[in-house]
Image (cartoon, rainbow, N blue to C red; front, side, top):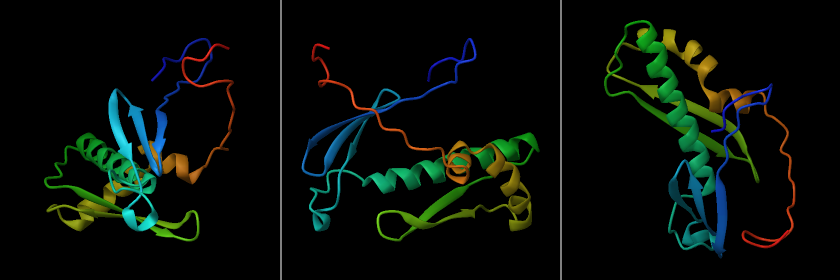
Length: 145
């Protein structure tokens, strides 16, 4: 993440390198992630699909947001799990659904869902989708410019 300064926004980047077929290697936050498609879709099944990572981002961000909201209210959420489900409609998800489970009574968790949504970066980004901008740079990595 880049620091904000002089009115500039904070940014975060990941880099995906295509390895052939339907496989990419992604460097994100210093970690290597493999992205692939299942064999049934022409991939090798060497890693999760891009949409799996998308759903993982939703589920994990919301779980962290719930934990934050609970902590602000001195509530503990033992065995908290969040399941993100996407319903495909062509080349996009037509529906995204989050399901929350914990041994804490449902009414206690329910009171945390709104505050958690307000601080969840991923759900906020989806709710107010920014435009996707594509730029093309000359040459590949290491090529002279």
